[in-house]
Every structure is written in structure tokens, then in C-alpha cells.
Length: 199
Ligand code: ITT
Image (cartoon, rainbow, N blue to C red):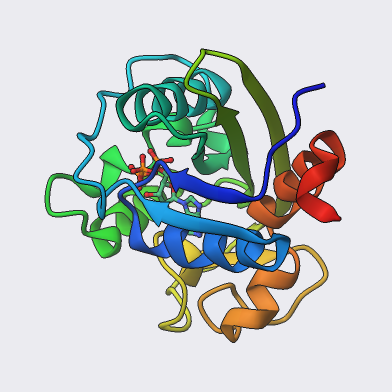
């Protein structure tokens, strides 16, 4: 199994909300993270058809361009009554202006009075410059509320109520959302795969 050495790791994402959450997970592991934006790396087109495929594509692009190991996150909201939409298109539903009020309204409109269960998925991929990759996936289940509640977090957080909770992700303080969500669940698997990260 490939070990992840302490040192610099590229966060292969251009989403500031993910940068915050991933840095919070990685920094305690002795990894110094630098974002793709800080390195001026291009944002690759997400041409794959799965979360894992797109995470791998983004991590490999960043590792190859930077010469450093890179971690990418591909994630999204899968609404059961919409056959899993927006899914891998979760960012694209917000349009070029990345307006998630628009994306949430579209989800709500398409749902109408159908059942409101949904889950978040996060695929994480670590890629090395020589092309080796490791991938994991985390999931949380919940329900979609309307109108959206809370101004914390990012993306679809204000309409997602994790099963068993009273506060949406948008209403939770940062530490509360970070303690258990699809990204943290994926990261826990990654840390088990790459033991050097958790020494
Ligand atoms: P990168 O590809 O640069 O990482 P992106 O925003 O385009 O940034 P994705 O293609 O993975 O990332 O899109 C996932 C979208 O799903 C993201 O823009 C959010 O709107 C949504 N999403 C993912 N995780 C979320 C979370 O924890 N809370 C709320 N929304 C989330």
C-alpha cells in the first residue's frame, strides 16, 4: 500500500467551502496543504460519469501538473425521487454564477410533493505524480427541507437535514458539520488506507 509522506499535498479543488473542510481534516495529520488555486493550476473539465471517476480525473490532473501528491473531492446531492439528480451535476445546477439559491430552488421545484429523501456523496482520490491513485467514498442520508434554513456551510447545506438531526447543515456551526458528514466519512476511510496520515 502506498504511504502518504508528511509534507506538501495539493488540494485539487477550486471550491472554497471544500478547501476549508479538507484543510481541517488534513492539517492535524501533519500535512501541509496548498490549494490548486494558490498554485494557479487549471480546473479540468469533469468528463467522467461517476463521482469516483471525476475525483480521480481531478486528482491526477493536479498531481501531474504540480509534481506533488494531490487530493481531489468529487461530491454531490443525490435526490432519490429525482433518480439521483443532480448527483455529479450538483455544481452545474448552480449555473456559471455558482448560485446555489437557484440550484436549491430547482431541486425543490422538480420535487414538488414527491418524497424528500436524499443523500450526499463524497468521493476522495489521492493521486501521485507517477499515476498511482487511491479512492474512497462516504455517504450521509437525510431529508430536504423547504424553505432553506441557515447561512452556514456552502452549496446545498441549507436544505439538507441529516437523519436524526434537527438542524440543517446550513444551521450547524462549522465544527458540528465537520464532525460528521459525507466528506469526513470518506476521509476516515482514507486515513485507514494510508496509515502514515494518521500517525
Ligand atoms: P471542484 O470540482 O473544484 O472541487 P466543485 O464545486 O465544482 O469544485 P463538484 O464538482 O464536486 O465540486 O460539485 C459538488 C457540488 O455539490 C458542490 O459545488 C456543492 O454545491 C455540492 N456539495 C458537495 N458537498 C457539499 C456539502 O458538504 N454541502 C453542501 N453542498 C455540497
